[in-house]
Length: 420
Image (cartoon, rainbow, N blue to C red; front, side):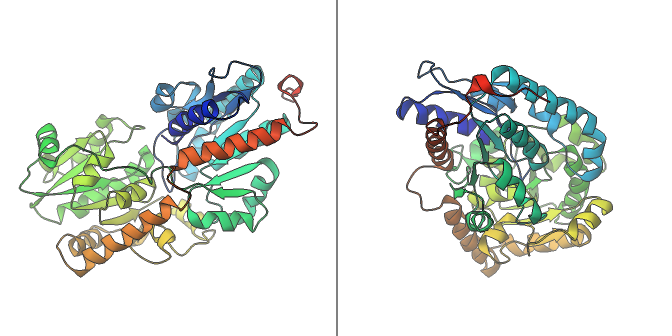
C-alpha cells in the first residue's frame, strides 16, 4: 500500500513540478507492520523523456500493479517473518534479489527508492549505490528499536531517509543520517463510509451484539503463533460478542480454517472479512498483533489490546537487542503505556480476556485510552501543512533528485557499472 500511494504522489509531484524527468519505481505492497513488515522499491527517473511518461518497476503486489508498477518480483514471495523461517527461505530470497538487481542493470534507473524491509533493502541500496544511483529510504528500518549499530548502513548507502514516526527524525539525524519526518502514510485515512447496518448485512453479523476485531498478523507464521491464543482469549469473553477476522492481502481465507476448527464454540461467531478498516471502525474493541494494524486501530479510534508471540529462540535472540521500553507503536509514539502489551509468556487467554473486559464498557479505562489514541493520531500526522505523507515524501524525492542531477560529476545512467 505504501508503494502504491507513493507512485500516485510521485506522478502528481513530477507532473506539477519542474520538467526534470520521467520515473520508474516499485514498492512495498500491503500493511505492514510495526512493521512489517515489508518490501523494497526501486524507482527510476530517466532524463530526456516526455514529461508524462512515468515508469515504475520493482517489487510489489496487486496494489502496486494497479498503480502502474511493473512488479518484476511479487511481494508475497518475500513475505516471511522470524529467524528460522527466513533461514529456510534464503535461497529463494537470494534468487529474487539477484533477479531484481539484474532488472535494474538492464533498465538503468537514475533513482532508487527502498521501502521498509531492512534485511533485503540495505543490500538493494548497497548495489544501487555501487552503480552511482541515488537512494531514498521511505518507511525506514526501526534501528532505533534494535541493532542500532546498523544505522551506519543508512549513512553509507542512503542519500535521504524519509521517516514516518515523529521521534525517528532526531534519532537518525543525531547519528549523521539526512532524515526527514514526512508523517505516517496511514495518518490521513478517513473512516469507511459503509454503515454498521450495511456492513452487518454484507457479512451476516448480528447488530444487537458488540463486535471485536481479531488481527493476528499478515504472515502465515504470525497467524500460526498468535491466532490460537487470540481465539482462546475471545472464547472466554462469552457469547455476547461476534468477532471480525480481516484476511490480510498476503493470506488466503482457506488458511484460517485449521485454526477455527478447534474453536468450535466460536466458529459461528468468527466472520472472515476482506478489509481491516471497516472492521476496526465498527468494532467495540480489538485484539491485535503488534504491527501496522495497531496504528490502523488507533486511527479508527478503536480501543485494543496488543498481543504478540514468536518462537522461543527468536524471542531469546531478539529480546536482548531491543532498545525500546515498549513493543506497541502506539505506546512508543505516546511515550507511555496507552494500550496493554501481552507479549510471549504474558500472552495468555486469561490475560487477553481480562484486558478486553476493561475497555469494553463505558468508563474511565475506555475514555482514557480513546483520548490517548487521539493524541497519537495527531502526532502521526505531523505539522507539515495539509499534505499527506506520500505527497510530502514525493516533494522530498523531487527536491533530492533535482539536487542530484545538477551535481557535477554525478554518473549518468549510461555510465553505471555492471554487477561484479
